[in-house]
Length: 291
Length: 294
Image (cartoon, rainbow over all chains, first blue to last red; front, side, top):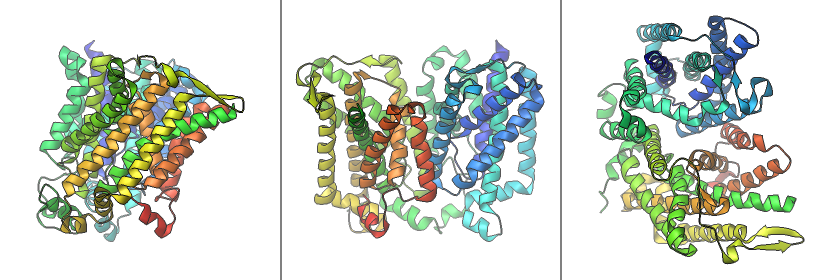
């Protein structure tokens, strides 16, 4: 019972981290559910049809998903802001419809027979990804990610390959999501394309928003709170989407720009600069100051 | 049969277009995605359900317009008012998404997760007519008629009235518009009112066509309209209408030729390709299209 909750929590933590990894480079992805599905189906195919053990199958699933992300990401990450949000939503829908139409993966009926994921496996996966994130945090890569996220023009002028870094973040996120997907598939032992609905991708993004994106622990907090609390508080389980939606709204309302404010107060917010020419002027003139 | 399918496609296309217009109006003026929009569309069906149980059909449209518009104002207040700066695009998308989740869950609490049948329509609406041996439903005519009237009304509003001129000014140059004394907040509110009212009517029309109000359509039907908005070009009203009808017909034809299961993918795939190749939209053409922006 408790181990079931912990397994699902672990998988959600991995998913939240996959969103966080993409978000580190300043892109918001609603495609993590799709990458989870890719990892789940790839690893599931390897274990059930080709008889591979879980660990190599998961790793291959992660690689397949990362390659998939690079292929999709190369064009998609040239898009920015709301264009990118739309493109990742599109990826989610396309992957789902594709899976529904691939007969050798069970089609719309679903794909089953995967076994073997248990609590230690999930714990090891969470641990490995945590180590990966810590390594990123203490390596120069973190600063490169920060630069790309905060101001890509400056980053480019410093000789950083902005698109390459974005794709790296996207691929890392996809690989982590694929590990989560593989574990999910081998724990549930039966999945259907509709298990990886667009709603899943939305929820995972909101876990991260709720927990905060300042550091790698924020997504963990969001995922744990939103997965474990409803299991123990009955009313919360009944009203889960409402409570969750309101929590995210309140979070955003009382911490405006919360999502992208990685540092509390930056020089950039006090002094109007490049992006302020359109942004902050609009901000000053908008709320009820018209004559 | 083919003609029937094409008409079906035009009918869905009309509803796609109504929802896509709402998305595109908000994108054009605020440069933000309104993720509450799909759920307002979904609520339109339930507004219809409530009003049709007590009132005749025309009142359902009036109620959908008014309640939908008020929901739009509420959305603006809760999910967009705090996030005005152009850096806050993602934040605004997320806050409207969260509000949409709350709306959907409240509908689930009141009516359950299954779709709810509408009271049956009697009289002219339930009838059919025939052209060249093919039978059509009067309902389809009504959907097309209502949509065209609304679109004509919107065109008049945007191109001829004072508020329409203000909307265009704000879309064109927000800073200059506010410097020239345009009440930016009021214009934004009216944009939300108009777009959400149109979405609610579209939801009512869809509920009438399928004889049921469904709480799932927000994330299926209406998100597709978001893709259609991008296909037509973000902020491009004419593009949204054309792309809506185009995708409606394409989907109906794919269904007719037996590729219906790939239908949903077509829209999104087309959207991704168009975002990459022609980010300004399928129907954009240089300077002319800039004038056609909201």
